[in-house]
Length: 313
Image (cartoon, rainbow, N blue to C red; front, top):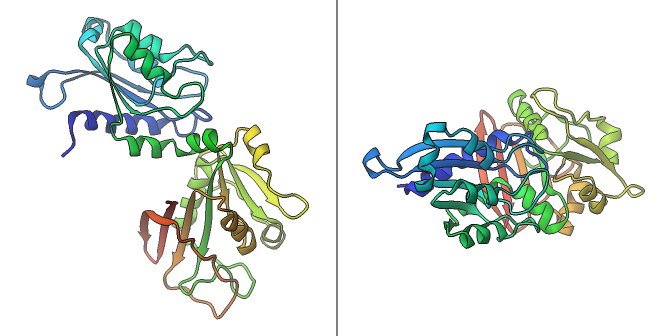
């Protein structure tokens, strides 16, 4: 059974995901403002809510306050604000949200997780506490961190969040004696295009590029196509360049050698494997070996195809 704080933080996470496409390179953030009233049920009265819609525009907290009706403004002094990520305390493209919260005079703030971005890192929370606001930190923390794992990885490790991706037959091959093979179903192919629309760049090796001429675009889903990258010995991957170009996430769809090069170096954060459970071939290129330090993040079954996402542990 979820607590009241968890219930409203869950709503923050739902709201935050609406900014998946346009909030980048900023994190996805949702905010909810509630007037606690035990006699109005578990949670109280919702005064306002919002999310970070677009980079350069108002943050979630700004939009949540803007949604509060004028006649409800006096109630803010007794209200609780829920926000999935620590309010910013620095001047960027917009003023500090921590200062706005203090000016609005809410009684309590519940934060999902601390912002690991160097300009924040606990400063927003401290500013609120110094102003006499009660602050609770760490409600649904794991979920809040997972939502912005690309953003956190980019700033913590100075590289993109890397997703290794391949499709394999039921007996573990990624091609048919070196020839390209249709392993995905039309539906799971659409899901691959959805993934591309959500990530910043996509990479293949030279052999895959020359043999299959993959477009690596979004054709079966709405959204921007990722930046197309091809690597070989003459053009190796430079993570510093990707970081400088603000590429926060990278899909690697290369062949066995390309995928193994990332696995060997430990350069991955997530692995997405699609298996066609009825298709077999007599031989070809074996699918990469999953590393030992993985755990299942999610698993979906779509008719004969299974997609399993693994995360590093």
